[in-house]
Image 1 (tube, one colour):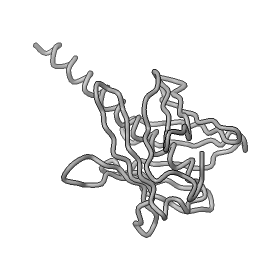
Image 2 (cartoon, helix red, strand yellow):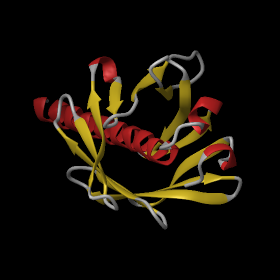
Image 3 (cartoon, helix red, strand yellow):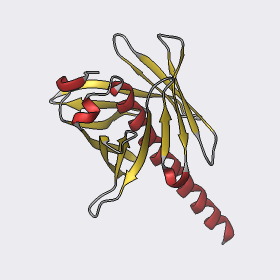
Length: 180
């Protein structure tokens, strides 16, 4: 993953094959995120020097542990709060918020720092259970030392949200069919 000012201003996440997503900018692949376990939605990201595993626990209110596999320890924790807003905490570091941004035109999600400055904005598009998103990184986001991890964790949250909604829809449909 490219850091700071070298990262393209506009990026896109897209599904390239079942369970594998790519982040692209200016015609280059910047990151790949792979689903490694359908049951708990663990995702990993690899490049030459970094590898993380995201491990989700809980059903109604979930949390995510982020394991830095190179260092062999947890490097972040995410906890879901009210109305789908999440708190991301780093040991000895900043605390960030992930939440939906209300717009008139489309659904957007963003990552914000403790001063409510926008770091990253995702505009997801879901069609036939396939999730894509255009991504914009602000100047404040470019200054984050762990921008690569934040891009991956944010995308992970959107993928999990789409998968959870598809599962809930299937349960509601099956229940409705069983009731008739």
